[in-house]
Image (cartoon, rainbow over all chains, first blue to last red; front, top):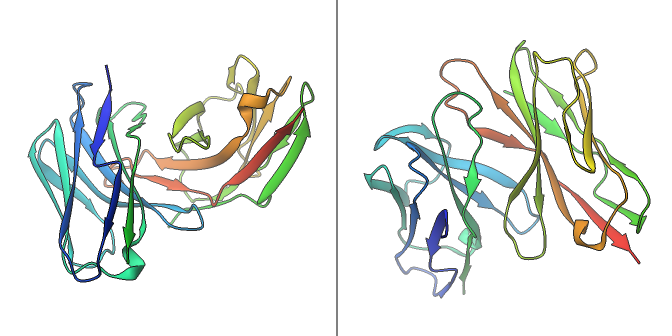
Length: 113
Length: 117
């Protein structure tokens, strides 16, 4: 059983389009995250939700809008895609507090042409 | 803000040998968590080992161990008996335990480790 899943795994699109990435976890965790890994492999937090409430909102263009319909799902919608948005986007989940060990999804490689 | 520095962009080791990856961090906090994550070519992020700052004993997980030097703010990863499957990008990460940090991970830039046969 997949613990943290993301769809799609690959996404190729044109500049200016709007796209969404979906994430689901079946670990019973209450906190989910979006990370961006750029072309140099650098990983940086973007957003985090705890029980559907936004708790981390790093400096990210407002073209990026996360949404958590319930604590098992966290989606990322990106408007007006730009070339610089090309990256791998990782979803992760954890139980808030304690070790906070984060379990990562397989990543979504987004390519903007 | 916390920073994590991995000074070795790339390293290589022969199969069965031992290799140490270095990591330093900067924080004013007294308690926090440190992690090493592995990212093989499959892209999956895999937790290798973790350490709580208030624990003096160095963490070990089979062939993986850390050398945690709190005063020096150093957290190196030692891989013993290297295997071809250890070839991956290794990321050091810091997590604050303080209220308001919300457990976000701050990553270093990674070290690409290649294990040669």
